[in-house]
Length: 380
Image (cartoon, rainbow, N blue to C red; front, side, top):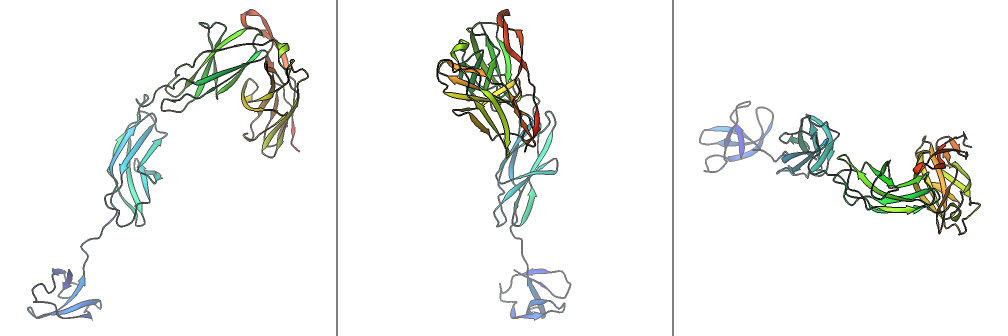
């Protein structure tokens, strides 16, 4: 199609050139009266010299994403959409997600979860596609309100799996696996239950992680355990019950001695000496425990040498350590605890001050509670 004007600055009219053979003769490239370059031709029917230019009737452009949906959850909203029907001749490289009119994130696929939202508050969402031509028009707006109650897709966790116990002298080491199902949400912790009665009187201990050293127990007694997992919905199903009978103190190794902790680069290195008494059976391994305080220790390693380097430490945080030797009869007595902090201090082994506390069934237990004393010095 050619667009022509009969005089400079005039309103253009549309004409199909040579459709009837009545116009378009003697066409040429010419400079028009407006000093612009035009295709010129002489209209013999009307006796006019006319100047024509090409006029586009519209070119493809990037369209908006379509089919935007919003699915509310607990403190979050999931958005899903379909790519634009027209990409304007250039492939979409990402999408811009708008929340209440403000761009909050970009993604390369057609789904995203917007979290950190307030339950019970309504939010508006829209999405725009972007390609080499720039950002296209936004989609239609959808609204969603995160639920103040857990969304139906969230349930409590399943039961933790493979609860294992290793009895020792006055203590039991427990470990387990995460449940096969977390209920659609993240596991926030575990609850360990224990009792001297397999049918009643269970007491609970909150635990972070999948292992726990239960200390301050009475030799010769049988302890019963099970564990549950927790998520934001609540406490899940219990694991199977297990039991452990504490061994005689003379049958397991005594405590490892001379435990020290030092900072090596960004790691913490522990060294210790073998126990003076192996309980009548050779030491087969050492279990290393760590915690952010002296009362909550979690197993971090099992080694056969009398040294361990902890590479998973946080700068500026005091890390507490203890070591237990193990023989064929069970886990031995705990070493003294030491502390170390990456970022300027090293730990020094300080013996614990043991005190008598009320034991299970009213008997006195020595060493069940302790006060951690620590002394720090500047790292070389």
